[in-house]
Length: 358
Image (cartoon, rainbow, N blue to C red):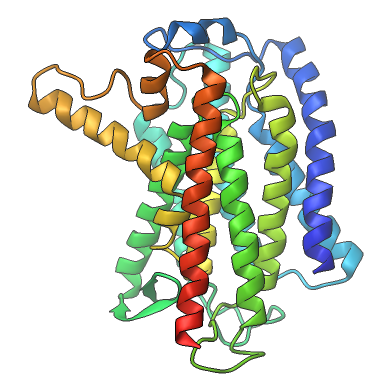
Protein backbone atom coordinates (compact mmCIF):
# COMPACT_ATOMS: atom_id res chain seq x y z
CA UNK A 1 0.00 0.00 0.00
CA UNK A 2 2.87 2.39 0.69
CA UNK A 3 4.06 2.01 -2.90
CA UNK A 4 0.57 2.88 -4.18
CA UNK A 5 0.38 6.07 -2.11
CA UNK A 6 3.95 7.03 -2.98
CA UNK A 7 3.44 6.49 -6.71
CA UNK A 8 0.26 8.57 -6.76
CA UNK A 9 1.77 11.38 -4.68
CA UNK A 10 5.08 11.49 -6.52
CA UNK A 11 3.51 11.50 -9.99
CA UNK A 12 1.19 14.31 -8.88
CA UNK A 13 4.15 16.42 -7.77
CA UNK A 14 6.25 15.53 -10.82
CA UNK A 15 3.41 16.54 -13.15
CA UNK A 16 2.56 19.80 -11.39
CA UNK A 17 6.15 21.02 -11.51
CA UNK A 18 7.06 19.29 -14.79
CA UNK A 19 4.09 20.70 -16.70
CA UNK A 20 5.00 24.25 -15.66
CA UNK A 21 8.49 23.67 -17.08
CA UNK A 22 7.11 22.03 -20.24
CA UNK A 23 4.84 25.02 -20.92
CA UNK A 24 7.83 27.36 -20.79
CA UNK A 25 10.04 25.15 -22.97
CA UNK A 26 7.37 24.32 -25.58
CA UNK A 27 6.19 27.93 -25.81
CA UNK A 28 9.77 29.15 -26.32
CA UNK A 29 10.29 26.63 -29.12
CA UNK A 30 6.94 27.36 -30.75
CA UNK A 31 5.51 23.89 -30.18
CA UNK A 32 1.92 25.11 -30.43
CA UNK A 33 -1.35 23.39 -31.23
CA UNK A 34 -2.84 23.64 -34.72
CA UNK A 35 -6.64 23.98 -34.83
CA UNK A 36 -9.04 22.35 -37.29
CA UNK A 37 -10.63 24.90 -39.63
CA UNK A 38 -13.90 22.93 -39.65
CA UNK A 39 -14.16 22.85 -35.85
CA UNK A 40 -16.05 25.25 -33.57
CA UNK A 41 -14.91 28.83 -34.23
CA UNK A 42 -14.40 29.41 -30.49
CA UNK A 43 -11.43 27.03 -30.66
CA UNK A 44 -9.45 29.30 -32.97
CA UNK A 45 -8.28 31.32 -29.97
CA UNK A 46 -6.44 28.18 -28.79
CA UNK A 47 -4.10 28.18 -31.78
CA UNK A 48 -0.50 28.23 -30.57
CA UNK A 49 -1.20 26.78 -27.12
CA UNK A 50 1.72 24.47 -26.20
CA UNK A 51 1.00 20.81 -26.94
CA UNK A 52 2.65 17.40 -26.38
CA UNK A 53 1.98 17.73 -22.63
CA UNK A 54 1.43 13.99 -22.62
CA UNK A 55 5.21 13.70 -22.40
CA UNK A 56 5.01 15.01 -18.83
CA UNK A 57 2.26 12.51 -17.93
CA UNK A 58 4.33 9.61 -19.30
CA UNK A 59 7.61 10.66 -17.69
CA UNK A 60 5.96 11.43 -14.34
CA UNK A 61 4.23 8.03 -14.31
CA UNK A 62 7.37 6.05 -15.11
CA UNK A 63 9.55 7.99 -12.67
CA UNK A 64 6.98 7.77 -9.87
CA UNK A 65 6.52 4.02 -10.33
CA UNK A 66 10.21 3.13 -10.20
CA UNK A 67 10.97 5.60 -7.40
CA UNK A 68 8.09 4.22 -5.32
CA UNK A 69 9.39 0.68 -5.84
CA UNK A 70 12.91 1.78 -4.92
CA UNK A 71 11.81 3.56 -1.73
CA UNK A 72 9.64 0.66 -0.55
CA UNK A 73 12.14 -2.01 -1.62
CA UNK A 74 9.41 -4.02 -3.37
CA UNK A 75 9.90 -6.10 -6.50
CA UNK A 76 9.15 -4.87 -10.00
CA UNK A 77 6.73 -7.28 -11.70
CA UNK A 78 6.32 -8.33 -15.32
CA UNK A 79 2.69 -7.13 -15.32
CA UNK A 80 3.69 -3.56 -14.41
CA UNK A 81 6.56 -3.58 -16.92
CA UNK A 82 4.25 -4.72 -19.72
CA UNK A 83 1.67 -2.08 -18.86
CA UNK A 84 4.34 0.62 -18.86
CA UNK A 85 5.66 -0.72 -22.18
CA UNK A 86 2.20 -0.33 -23.73
CA UNK A 87 1.75 3.10 -22.11
CA UNK A 88 5.10 4.43 -23.33
CA UNK A 89 4.91 2.65 -26.71
CA UNK A 90 1.60 4.19 -27.73
CA UNK A 91 2.74 7.51 -26.28
CA UNK A 92 5.72 7.33 -28.64
CA UNK A 93 3.41 6.82 -31.63
CA UNK A 94 1.40 9.83 -30.47
CA UNK A 95 4.56 11.88 -29.99
CA UNK A 96 5.64 11.22 -33.58
CA UNK A 97 2.18 12.31 -34.75
CA UNK A 98 2.32 15.52 -32.69
CA UNK A 99 5.89 16.35 -33.65
CA UNK A 100 5.21 15.98 -37.38
CA UNK A 101 2.21 18.31 -37.06
CA UNK A 102 4.39 20.93 -35.38
CA UNK A 103 7.42 20.47 -37.60
CA UNK A 104 5.45 20.63 -40.85
CA UNK A 105 2.88 23.13 -39.51
CA UNK A 106 -0.11 21.14 -40.65
CA UNK A 107 -3.12 19.59 -38.93
CA UNK A 108 -2.15 16.10 -40.17
CA UNK A 109 0.75 14.33 -38.49
CA UNK A 110 1.41 10.68 -39.21
CA UNK A 111 -0.53 9.29 -42.13
CA UNK A 112 -3.42 7.13 -40.94
CA UNK A 113 -1.71 4.01 -42.30
CA UNK A 114 1.57 4.76 -40.50
CA UNK A 115 -0.26 5.56 -37.28
CA UNK A 116 -2.23 2.32 -37.51
CA UNK A 117 0.93 0.32 -38.13
CA UNK A 118 2.63 1.91 -35.12
CA UNK A 119 -0.31 1.23 -32.80
CA UNK A 120 -0.69 -2.31 -34.11
CA UNK A 121 3.01 -3.14 -33.71
CA UNK A 122 3.04 -2.04 -30.06
CA UNK A 123 -0.25 -3.83 -29.36
CA UNK A 124 0.87 -7.10 -30.98
CA UNK A 125 4.07 -7.22 -28.91
CA UNK A 126 2.06 -6.50 -25.76
CA UNK A 127 -0.62 -9.06 -26.69
CA UNK A 128 1.98 -11.78 -27.21
CA UNK A 129 3.96 -11.03 -24.05
CA UNK A 130 0.96 -10.92 -21.69
CA UNK A 131 0.21 -14.53 -22.61
CA UNK A 132 3.77 -15.68 -21.96
CA UNK A 133 4.70 -17.44 -18.71
CA UNK A 134 7.67 -15.40 -17.53
CA UNK A 135 8.80 -17.56 -14.66
CA UNK A 136 12.20 -16.11 -13.68
CA UNK A 137 10.81 -12.81 -12.39
CA UNK A 138 9.50 -12.58 -8.81
CA UNK A 139 5.84 -13.34 -8.06
CA UNK A 140 5.33 -15.41 -11.21
CA UNK A 141 3.04 -17.95 -9.47
CA UNK A 142 2.57 -19.79 -12.77
CA UNK A 143 -0.06 -17.27 -13.88
CA UNK A 144 0.26 -15.36 -17.14
CA UNK A 145 -0.30 -11.58 -16.96
CA UNK A 146 -3.45 -11.97 -19.10
CA UNK A 147 -6.06 -14.69 -19.13
CA UNK A 148 -6.82 -16.94 -22.08
CA UNK A 149 -10.52 -16.14 -22.05
CA UNK A 150 -12.70 -13.09 -22.64
CA UNK A 151 -13.55 -11.57 -19.27
CA UNK A 152 -16.17 -9.42 -17.61
CA UNK A 153 -15.20 -9.17 -13.95
CA UNK A 154 -13.20 -12.40 -14.27
CA UNK A 155 -12.58 -15.00 -16.99
CA UNK A 156 -15.86 -16.25 -18.45
CA UNK A 157 -16.05 -20.03 -18.55
CA UNK A 158 -16.45 -21.29 -22.10
CA UNK A 159 -15.10 -18.15 -23.76
CA UNK A 160 -11.45 -19.23 -23.95
CA UNK A 161 -9.88 -18.35 -27.29
CA UNK A 162 -6.90 -19.76 -29.17
CA UNK A 163 -3.80 -17.66 -28.62
CA UNK A 164 -3.86 -16.10 -32.09
CA UNK A 165 -7.49 -15.01 -31.83
CA UNK A 166 -6.90 -13.70 -28.30
CA UNK A 167 -3.97 -11.57 -29.50
CA UNK A 168 -6.19 -10.18 -32.28
CA UNK A 169 -8.87 -9.37 -29.69
CA UNK A 170 -6.31 -7.60 -27.47
CA UNK A 171 -4.97 -5.60 -30.43
CA UNK A 172 -8.49 -4.48 -31.40
CA UNK A 173 -9.26 -3.55 -27.79
CA UNK A 174 -6.09 -1.46 -27.52
CA UNK A 175 -6.62 0.25 -30.87
CA UNK A 176 -10.26 1.00 -30.08
CA UNK A 177 -9.61 2.34 -26.60
CA UNK A 178 -6.60 4.47 -27.53
CA UNK A 179 -8.53 6.04 -30.41
CA UNK A 180 -11.59 6.55 -28.17
CA UNK A 181 -9.56 8.56 -25.65
CA UNK A 182 -8.01 10.44 -28.57
CA UNK A 183 -11.49 11.40 -29.80
CA UNK A 184 -12.46 12.55 -26.30
CA UNK A 185 -9.44 14.85 -26.12
CA UNK A 186 -11.17 17.75 -27.84
CA UNK A 187 -12.02 20.12 -24.97
CA UNK A 188 -9.88 21.57 -22.19
CA UNK A 189 -9.47 19.00 -19.43
CA UNK A 190 -12.05 16.54 -20.75
CA UNK A 191 -9.79 13.57 -21.51
CA UNK A 192 -7.50 14.17 -18.53
CA UNK A 193 -10.39 14.33 -16.06
CA UNK A 194 -12.19 11.32 -17.53
CA UNK A 195 -8.99 9.25 -17.63
CA UNK A 196 -8.18 10.19 -14.04
CA UNK A 197 -11.52 8.71 -12.91
CA UNK A 198 -11.04 5.49 -14.87
CA UNK A 199 -7.51 4.89 -13.57
CA UNK A 200 -8.67 5.77 -10.06
CA UNK A 201 -11.32 3.07 -10.42
CA UNK A 202 -8.73 0.55 -11.61
CA UNK A 203 -6.58 1.38 -8.58
CA UNK A 204 -9.49 0.29 -6.37
CA UNK A 205 -10.20 -2.78 -8.54
CA UNK A 206 -6.57 -3.89 -8.28
CA UNK A 207 -6.44 -3.39 -4.51
CA UNK A 208 -9.63 -5.44 -4.12
CA UNK A 209 -8.32 -8.17 -6.41
CA UNK A 210 -5.14 -8.35 -4.35
CA UNK A 211 -7.11 -8.64 -1.10
CA UNK A 212 -9.25 -11.39 -2.64
CA UNK A 213 -6.45 -13.08 -4.58
CA UNK A 214 -6.59 -16.83 -4.91
CA UNK A 215 -3.03 -16.89 -3.51
CA UNK A 216 -4.16 -15.34 -0.22
CA UNK A 217 -7.89 -16.06 0.03
CA UNK A 218 -8.75 -19.23 -1.92
CA UNK A 219 -12.44 -19.60 -2.56
CA UNK A 220 -15.20 -19.52 -5.18
CA UNK A 221 -14.98 -15.74 -5.60
CA UNK A 222 -11.19 -15.25 -5.56
CA UNK A 223 -9.35 -13.61 -8.44
CA UNK A 224 -6.69 -15.25 -10.63
CA UNK A 225 -4.86 -12.02 -11.41
CA UNK A 226 -1.09 -12.19 -11.46
CA UNK A 227 0.22 -8.93 -9.95
CA UNK A 228 -2.79 -6.86 -8.88
CA UNK A 229 -1.00 -4.85 -6.21
CA UNK A 230 1.74 -3.74 -8.59
CA UNK A 231 -0.84 -2.88 -11.25
CA UNK A 232 -2.45 -0.69 -8.60
CA UNK A 233 0.88 1.14 -8.21
CA UNK A 234 0.93 1.94 -11.94
CA UNK A 235 -2.76 2.91 -11.94
CA UNK A 236 -2.20 5.24 -8.97
CA UNK A 237 0.80 6.82 -10.71
CA UNK A 238 -1.24 7.54 -13.85
CA UNK A 239 -4.13 8.85 -11.75
CA UNK A 240 -1.80 11.25 -9.95
CA UNK A 241 -0.22 12.34 -13.24
CA UNK A 242 -3.62 13.14 -14.78
CA UNK A 243 -4.62 15.02 -11.62
CA UNK A 244 -1.49 17.16 -11.71
CA UNK A 245 -1.74 17.78 -15.46
CA UNK A 246 -5.35 18.91 -15.05
CA UNK A 247 -4.11 21.91 -13.03
CA UNK A 248 -2.79 23.40 -16.27
CA UNK A 249 -5.07 21.62 -18.75
CA UNK A 250 -8.38 22.79 -17.24
CA UNK A 251 -10.19 25.55 -19.09
CA UNK A 252 -8.64 27.80 -20.28
CA UNK A 253 -5.90 25.26 -20.99
CA UNK A 254 -2.29 26.43 -20.80
CA UNK A 255 -1.13 23.19 -22.45
CA UNK A 256 -2.67 20.25 -24.33
CA UNK A 257 -1.71 16.60 -23.91
CA UNK A 258 -1.84 15.97 -27.67
CA UNK A 259 -1.87 12.50 -29.19
CA UNK A 260 1.19 11.80 -27.04
CA UNK A 261 -1.02 11.76 -23.97
CA UNK A 262 -4.33 10.54 -25.34
CA UNK A 263 -2.92 7.45 -27.09
CA UNK A 264 -0.82 6.58 -24.03
CA UNK A 265 -3.78 6.93 -21.66
CA UNK A 266 -6.07 4.93 -23.95
CA UNK A 267 -3.48 2.18 -24.23
CA UNK A 268 -3.00 2.19 -20.46
CA UNK A 269 -6.74 1.77 -19.88
CA UNK A 270 -6.93 -1.14 -22.34
CA UNK A 271 -3.83 -2.80 -20.89
CA UNK A 272 -5.25 -2.50 -17.41
CA UNK A 273 -8.50 -4.14 -18.53
CA UNK A 274 -6.62 -7.03 -20.14
CA UNK A 275 -4.46 -7.77 -17.10
CA UNK A 276 -7.23 -7.36 -14.52
CA UNK A 277 -9.50 -9.71 -16.53
CA UNK A 278 -12.12 -6.97 -17.01
CA UNK A 279 -12.12 -6.45 -20.78
CA UNK A 280 -15.92 -6.30 -21.11
CA UNK A 281 -16.34 -4.27 -17.93
CA UNK A 282 -14.14 -1.64 -19.57
CA UNK A 283 -17.09 -0.71 -21.79
CA UNK A 284 -18.85 0.50 -18.62
CA UNK A 285 -15.91 1.94 -16.67
CA UNK A 286 -14.88 3.83 -19.82
CA UNK A 287 -18.47 4.46 -20.87
CA UNK A 288 -17.80 8.10 -21.72
CA UNK A 289 -15.14 7.05 -24.23
CA UNK A 290 -17.59 4.55 -25.73
CA UNK A 291 -20.29 7.21 -26.12
CA UNK A 292 -17.84 9.53 -27.88
CA UNK A 293 -16.74 6.81 -30.29
CA UNK A 294 -20.30 5.69 -31.03
CA UNK A 295 -21.28 9.30 -31.81
CA UNK A 296 -18.59 9.42 -34.50
CA UNK A 297 -19.62 6.05 -35.95
CA UNK A 298 -23.29 7.11 -36.05
CA UNK A 299 -22.42 10.45 -37.61
CA UNK A 300 -20.37 8.88 -40.40
CA UNK A 301 -22.90 6.10 -41.01
CA UNK A 302 -25.87 8.49 -41.09
CA UNK A 303 -24.00 10.89 -43.39
CA UNK A 304 -23.34 8.10 -45.91
CA UNK A 305 -26.83 6.59 -45.71
CA UNK A 306 -28.63 9.91 -46.15
CA UNK A 307 -26.14 11.26 -48.72
CA UNK A 308 -24.96 14.29 -46.80
CA UNK A 309 -27.29 14.78 -43.84
CA UNK A 310 -25.89 14.92 -40.30
CA UNK A 311 -27.25 13.27 -37.18
CA UNK A 312 -25.32 15.64 -34.89
CA UNK A 313 -24.17 19.16 -35.61
CA UNK A 314 -20.64 17.87 -35.23
CA UNK A 315 -18.94 14.75 -33.91
CA UNK A 316 -17.52 13.72 -31.47
CA UNK A 317 -20.52 14.45 -29.29
CA UNK A 318 -18.93 17.17 -27.15
CA UNK A 319 -18.69 19.44 -30.22
CA UNK A 320 -22.42 18.95 -30.88
CA UNK A 321 -23.26 20.55 -27.54
CA UNK A 322 -20.76 23.35 -28.12
CA UNK A 323 -22.52 24.20 -31.37
CA UNK A 324 -25.84 24.17 -29.51
CA UNK A 325 -24.50 27.09 -27.51
CA UNK A 326 -23.18 25.42 -24.35
CA UNK A 327 -20.06 26.97 -22.84
CA UNK A 328 -16.99 24.75 -23.13
CA UNK A 329 -16.58 24.44 -19.36
CA UNK A 330 -20.25 23.43 -19.05
CA UNK A 331 -19.79 20.63 -21.58
CA UNK A 332 -16.63 19.41 -19.84
CA UNK A 333 -18.10 19.35 -16.32
CA UNK A 334 -21.30 17.62 -17.46
CA UNK A 335 -19.34 15.04 -19.43
CA UNK A 336 -17.16 14.48 -16.34
CA UNK A 337 -20.36 13.80 -14.39
CA UNK A 338 -21.53 11.33 -17.04
CA UNK A 339 -18.12 9.65 -16.92
CA UNK A 340 -18.32 9.47 -13.11
CA UNK A 341 -21.72 7.76 -13.33
CA UNK A 342 -20.29 5.15 -15.70
CA UNK A 343 -17.30 4.57 -13.40
CA UNK A 344 -19.53 4.26 -10.33
CA UNK A 345 -21.78 1.79 -12.15
CA UNK A 346 -18.78 -0.27 -13.24
CA UNK A 347 -17.35 -0.41 -9.71
CA UNK A 348 -20.78 -1.27 -8.33
CA UNK A 349 -21.20 -4.19 -10.73
CA UNK A 350 -17.65 -5.37 -10.03
CA UNK A 351 -18.32 -5.47 -6.29
CA UNK A 352 -21.83 -6.91 -6.66
CA UNK A 353 -20.49 -9.80 -8.73
CA UNK A 354 -18.00 -10.63 -5.98
CA UNK A 355 -20.73 -10.49 -3.32
CA UNK A 356 -22.93 -12.80 -5.38
CA UNK A 357 -20.04 -15.21 -5.97
CA UNK A 358 -18.99 -15.22 -2.31
